[in-house]
Amino acid sequence: MDCWLELAPILTLIEEVHYMPGVILKTSETLESAIRRYKRACEKSGIFAEVRRREYYEKPTEARKRRFAAAVKRCRKRLMRDNPCFIAKTKTKRKH
Image (cartoon, rainbow, N blue to C red):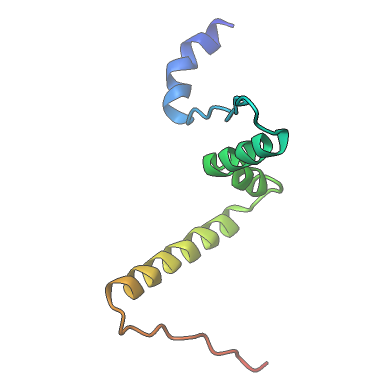
């Protein structure tokens, strides 16, 4: 047990701390609206995206491809925003 106590400062530097979102029921508030607020809070905190991402094992090459595709998408989006005359080239389908 002493080993974990020594590693605690290191683990806090490595891992991000996430708190579970909560909702306090307001007076005269319906349960449905409270559930809606809770779902919105979970979506904002990124819990659903994290669950979807960890649903299955992602190979390191797949993760690299996903990150690269996201970077390309961000770059194109930035180009479109900065230069409205820019027309992105569409991919042409190859004939097999």
